[in-house]
Amino acid sequence: MAGLTVITAAGWFVRPSPALAHGAVPPMPRWPDTLVAWTIDPLPFLAIVGAALGYWWLVRRVERRHPRNPVPRTRHWAWMGGLAAVVAALLSPIETYSGALLTVHMVQHLLLQFVAAPLLLLAAPITVLLRAVGPTTRRGLLIVLHSRLVRVLTFPLLAWFLFAALNWGWHFSDLYDRALEVDWLHYLQHLTLFGAALLFWYPVVGADPGPWRLPHPVRMFYLFLAMPQNSFLGVAILNAAGVLYPHYATSGRDWGPDPLLDQQAAGTLMWVWGDLALILAMVAVIAAWVRQEERRNAREEARLDAEARLEAEARL
Image (cartoon, rainbow, N blue to C red):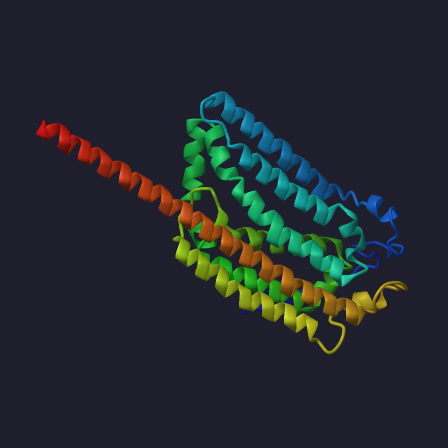
């Protein structure tokens, strides 16, 4: 795949620094000490705070400009839930122990890709932004949203392949191991995986207007095709004969499972969690499809009733 080729080529230009991106190996998890083992990394912390405050400010603007049609509360909760998943992945003890156990690192990536990304898209941030700004700014934003670049990036087939290629490329190249020891590469890994997840989920759950609106049957097929590649990736990690990422074998950790067993657990987690998330998404698509058909039938029945009343009145 193209993503695998690019990532592998980039690995030749990356050299680990002496300081580990994840820091020294943390002590064995002990209750309740582990609960306070948070890592307040300034970059994700400021980004999360900015996203929370920015969305809140936009919502207040919409309420002032459109008091009879405010942002639905469900979108508030979706945005805050998505940010909570990002907090759990990048600031909580999950981040603290992700450099010691591949299983925990896998949980981190799964939170970003299968929980945070779809929840943030359900909050319809682009729609909220368009409703909050003035006409001039709105016209400029709409020009960007309808640009060729956005149409290409959000094309469902490209988004699907990009999501798959980046996941396979990161997990089966030297860059995954180097990202554990190079700060900027660690940030790039999270950014690309999270960005690919946003593009992947957008055609399925995106509540914002966009150039590509998939019918519900196509959304089902789109998600169904994602399951085999996720399963194969998880199984490939599970069945690897040796340790794929030397960092976990040489980190000096003297507690917990051995690196190979940890790796097998991580592969199993990707397989099960990823497939379960995709199945739940398909169930949600079916539910949305049923609601759409019910609304369509209700409108049709109302139209037929109105026509029948008019005919009855005309005969009188």
